[in-house]
Length: 176
Image (cartoon, rainbow, N blue to C red; front, top):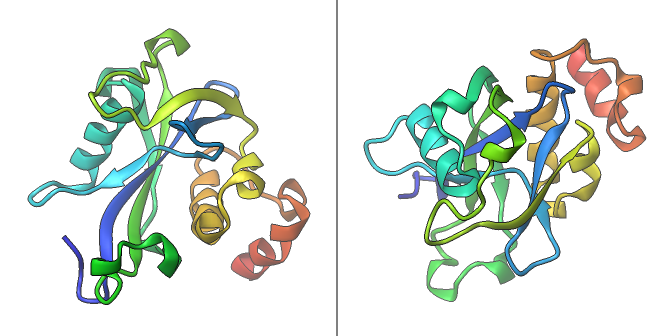
């Protein structure tokens, strides 16, 4: 399901623990790490898709989390052409995402990376809130920055000095 511009509707999930550290998942059989995310199926609301993806990728149910916030609108990223299947190259551009900020109210032991028949991650860890900005694959970096900046206001007062140096100018521009 693509929109007119070639973007697939999707949700992204920033899951934090009591110390405001973020859940960071290692993609199965790869050396890349990312937040849980996934497509919105026809007829699903973004919130319904978020809870489905949360269970499929992380094994958590609604009772394990509390919604703290979500992005106001869609955040988009383009997928590099060489990563797109040849038959989709003329129609598919990338993802448009609504991001949710969730607080884990359950326990770490509630996380189960094998909740579905098609696991997304084979390892996970808690990381400092801003670490994903430096660690995520390059083409997703701007969307991660936008999502983390917008959602951080639900956790703490964001000061540009709190950000990795490379992202301070963007945060300062958003404040003015």
